[in-house]
Length: 373
Image (cartoon, rainbow, N blue to C red; front, side, top):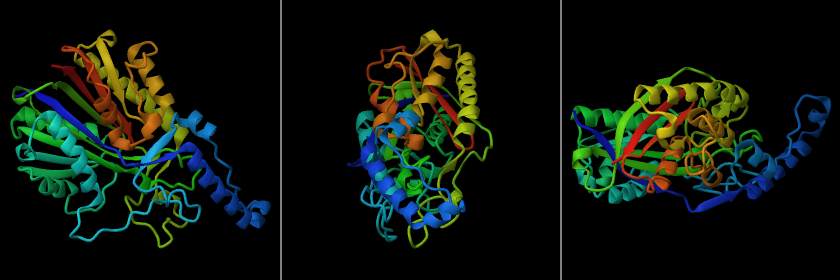
């Protein structure tokens, strides 16, 4: 049996930013026009008028101040309200693979590894650009990695589930070095015309290098243990998947063909599920709350993270103990906790323990207990 370690991480961040004010201006222009065009039906009660959004509403509801996206022009056009992501030919790299190459290159540099030394690539994300061939196999070829590759999807927990799969194979000896990539194009499956969720998501890609601790050439985090759990729920759902939209760019009357959630139910059901999952994981490993130096949580909602942090720590965590990147990146699905880990782990000292946790649709919860070596 071998001890797995995380030896490098990388983050691809798009160069386009949408502030709350920009988003609100576009949404309100759309809502105003909608209400004007449907004034008669609204007056008779056949259709509900669309309420305006505001930056204050967004921050209070989520803690988000901005988001990075691959295309802001389409999203901010009241006549479009979705990103312009033109289809690519079969001879061109997929958009997800292109994002993954950037994040992977950064992670490999930090790990001190060449792509040729990687013998497993997992592309773990909440939505995939196509059914097959696997995006992971495309990434493997473009990188020049060896071994094998496969895609996986556990919604917002895809990254932590991918890390568990890679860590288990490293422990068993079937692979020496693995790359887990999380290209999340969340803007493509968000309904930007829905006030309740139009602010939630952003785009990003993260990558993590895992290998045998005995092979690690530099600073690394031992993966002490991993734990995953799922529980079926319809409260977060997407019935269409990725970029397949109707000719006008939307889904007609099928609102459930894009991201949809029952927010209050999610809040009520997920918080105790995640809090207990983390507590049980720590107890099984003999880790007390006072020993936990860092908690890298899924970046979905500030209020949810604050609640979980208090439950896990038994007190209000200090900002450095539970870093948030939500205000800058918004919800980036499975990549969020890895962004937090990548940006806020360098200061930990040898022997310090931290926990990466993600949670989302499914429901799914994944946690990774790490120790700075």
